[in-house]
Image (tube, rainbow, N blue to C red):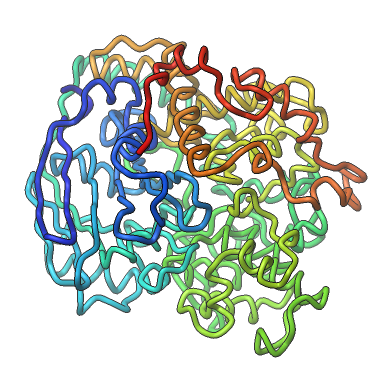
Length: 605
């Protein structure tokens, strides 16, 4: 095969059996890879009725046909499993260098089954794989684990692992690769920990065949030039990283503050990308094959919050900053560093801490339950809670379950700012209407990276939309969700979509795989993936009532700023969105749509 390697590695952790098999070529053409192909394999092999933390859940690491090739930001891979946080089908995307290394080692996909009797790690090297004891690694942080495995295997080994949070089955635990990159959302770290799998180390020295090397280089060069010329992907992200958004989103009146009590943070300047560049920035950093360099390496020198590493991204800066009412950038960076070491989703944990503070302030949580008082703008307490959650210590046990289960245990689930139990990210849907519809209809819960309508609604790319209007937002949300699904599946970074679209992706796929893809094909593939995920969730029991935002988004208008007096209008947009997708009024894909996408004969276990 060209683009793909053509080989799947399957590991039964219970028996220790390791085997290889041919990649399903038909599925590869129809779903590409990463999120798409991972979900297609998953629904074919795993019953919808299993518990996400049981040995019956499978954990799939999938690359795409563009992963590891010359192209536009080709360092992505996806982890697919049933989520222990949401109970939905979950695909958690990550960058760095681990995904390309898996392909260089000879595999498009890794399927992990069962549960090891004792802690193990998996070593994959040039087409071969073996399980090794990880008992000495159990309890170590992410960097400690990575350093130990590299020392025991190869200097250039790429490592994906869980920290203490994953070992202890925290539902908001993530899988970390390259120390600071995260397959962050949906609790994939807990699934990995439930299998007694501490880490995966990959060493690859092989290459990837392409159909037309000369054409592939030409289209890659053109696409990369387009990305570089774009004011966001070529300038803003390179200069200030994703924290370039702090001032932009705050000025638009859409930065959720103090658990979405407000949508403007009065001290946003203190946690902005500009401030970080002045005080903590060491250098920009890129993932494999990327010319955007959105990541930041930072250092905090003050003794109290001293740390060094990658991040934080905008979402993390928001979750531990504005959402917790904290305006101390040193403390925010320290919170990010702790999460990376413990292996925790920064969005979910920061939002869960904000939810806990909100519950405490309204006397739904007591000092006896927590152990101390909770207040907004208390950075030291936030850091204490991060460590408690990552180690499942005291009140941290409840935090580790995510905001919905915490709020529900207090009798007030409405305090959880989540969709399908996944915490909403850093864009207030009362101020930015399209992103609210995207949150409500994303298959894995409130995910901004699965249909990033912030691009047109706030940034103005590919054209500027009225953020307060609901006109045609159903069209834009569907288009962005479908396009994002295809970029995810191909193995390209979301941020390239600020500059390029379906045509450029189709050109890169065609040159590298030798299969003739068009822009229309790219959109159809994305739509197929979205509908497949939707069908799975329906089998689990999700329906129209789950495609909604927290009540606060409908009942509590924004208090101040550009979005003053606005509420989310998702209920008004939802019928038009369902209709545009070819779904009935209950959000169920109709037979005609399933036939159009080749899903009419699909059966679930």
